[in-house]
Each structure stands twice: as C-alpha cells, then as structure tokens.
Image (cartoon, rainbow, N blue to C red; front, side, top):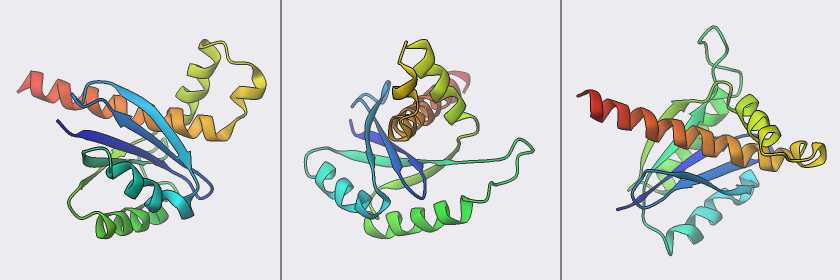
Length: 143
C-alpha cells in the first residue's frame, strides 16, 4: 500500500507527516523550508510510494477560512502541478497547534523544546494526518 503525506503549511516552515504503508498510523517526518519543499518531496518519492497529500486548512472558530488560506491553496495548486499523480485533500486543522503544544507538555518536553516552532509544525502535521486517518476509518465503519 502507498503512504499518505500530511502538510501543515506555513510561510516560514512546512511541517510534514507520513502514514505507515497500511495507512493506519501517522508519524512526524520533517519540517522543511517552503523553498525546499518540492525538492524534499522529489527525494522522498524516489524511495517511497505516496498516494495522496492531506493539507491542513486552518479555519477560524466561526468556521471561516483564516487569512493564510489563499497562500495554502496556491501552494496546493503548485503541488498538484508538480506531482499530478497524487491526490490532494484539504482537512480542517483547527486547534492543531494547541494540540501539538499540549502533546509536547504531556510528553514532558522542557520549555525550550516546546518553543521549537519546527517541532510544533511537525507535530501539527502528525495530528492532521492522524485525525484524517481516523475520520476516514470511521466513515468506512459507518457505511
């Protein structure tokens, strides 16, 4: 089976997570500079089969798109053009940064580590992917 990649896109960093081949468990993969992300994926695809991208789409608490959504959609369009064989799915990423900080706190990471924004972005991507996998699994169970 192919893997699924999740992306937590930011103007300064792109958090990347990947599923296991059975598409059951998400794990943090990397945090990459936006200018390097396409090269990173080319290198990753040389050794790994990836079926789709799940891109976090931040929404405000009222459900409206946050101000970065146009840049994320532009990034997704470039990603689709560069890697047309892979499906792109958007997934609501509301509160993933808060959950990432909570996860770091519960894991016992020191305050200095919790301030590492690259680590937060990678954990956020992992949360996006795990929630996507769990939602997909629930849809299958319920149908």
